[in-house]
Image: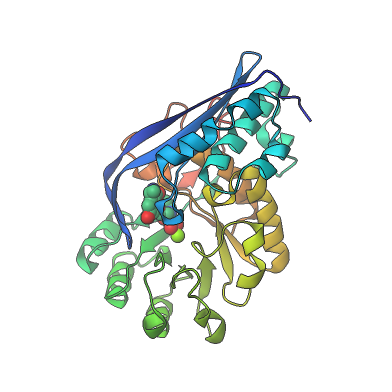
Length: 331
Ligand SMILES: CC(C)C[C@H](N)C(=O)N[C@H](CCOc1cc(O)cc2c1C(=O)N[C@@H]2C)C(=O)O
Ligand SMILES: [Mg+2]
């Protein structure tokens, strides 16, 4: 284990405009609000980025303060292993965990996947997200993206069967996955699932609100159902096995790449399919998530594709193909 003595920590909020806007069942966004942690030692700096999620009570200011509160611990030599027990899972620990891995990679001259003894990631097809809107608006946005092999369609409750039919007409060749972001109810669950199955949707993400999703264990699921808001880290996996076929792993939920990789191993052992997901964020958030892609059936790392501008040394995207990061970005 590399000693972290005499390290320093800096953190700040950084905002990136979204090209247009992005809408899900909980509302619309026009910018990505990220918090960046930088750990420096011996002239080297490791960086990590996170996105605080109001759904879990996180704000940019509180996340920044939580990272800054670790300053003394970092100066005293906090290791990545010790970090896991020092902070709760969530966005703040994610930024710090990824910054410590980036610094360790720079200090050892190893790429992050070699450092962590994981498979070398290759290029993968990412989902491309279609914002929630009227069936007509979603069909128009889908038509513009119909050349992409995998589309993630945001749904929102009333009128979802009409939305998904309109989308399918606009993209007959693409694989479709949908994300209801907790907007369905027990009353419309069977009808909405049937509408998705009828047009060949492969997977539905988080149809029911977290904590109110027991009905998923009682019905015959006509297509794969994936937990997002219901699942956080390894501890939340086992009770979900009867309700879900897949889990969406996001580093902002797990509190970093260290737990995300452990969670991916545990999820596979329990028989879940894996989606590696993201928030609206820059390439610096996507780069560590690329280490989970070798285990993932679905890669949902399109955050930067929705931004008006990304960071320097951004990940390479060729349409929907996303490539592993260059060391100049991360790891
Ligand atoms: C660019 C997409 C959003 C990335 C991904 N394909 C995706 O669908 N992720 C969503 C996460 C939704 O992101 C939200 C939701 C929200 O209510 C508030 C925010 C964000 C976000 O990224 N920033 C703000 C805080 C998913 O899988 O559910
Ligand atoms: Mg989701």
